[in-house]
Image 1 (cartoon, one colour):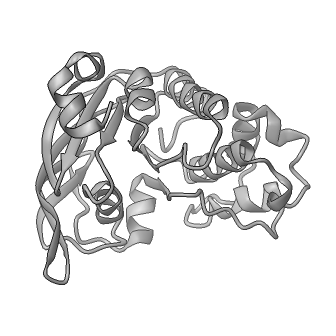
Image 2 (image 1 turned 30 degrees about the horizontal axis):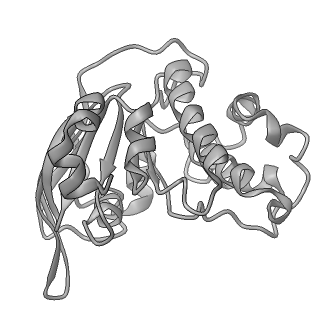
Image 3 (image 1 turned 180 degrees about the vertical axis):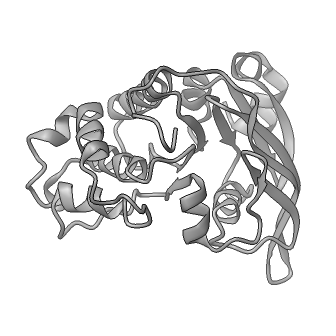
Length: 249
């Protein structure tokens, strides 16, 4: 997707993001303990678990914001484990952090343009126009400060800004945080539509396990830094033991 139009026809592929025995620590606390998972090209996957399970640390370690102590991360077959974050972005991994992290003083368009910062063709308007097409509510607000947007619109802006980098894989950390149930449902549906329309590969970290599993294809459940369960999303939804033990519903 990094070199293709955002409205290109999706193509199913093999493993795009591979995590092998990944461990990471905060001092003496091991936050990730030999995590292994595979995300296929054009996959829409959920990473679930309670607070402290290691979900956010996983995303931060994948993107180089937190250093792995062991293990490997491969994107399209390339080992990106030790690359600095800006290099990881140019290789095709984009991260929308918890809360989105938009700059409220800048306009919608200015926030979007920041997403192309590490692209060599960042002056190209093609992606900006494509992102605007994907998020119609942002079109009429493109000249307004991001601080004037609703919570759902800010989340759209954060996702759109990440898409400006033309990623192969989009990582999202708790996009439903602080949003009303109806807006959360809209954001989840938007992610599925985005995958279906563009072929983008998406990894969704969520505490709203039921909502995430309802729109994803595959799920990974973390518990105390380890993968405790994984499988097709509908199978995890139907597994009473897994739901009660790890997902809280």
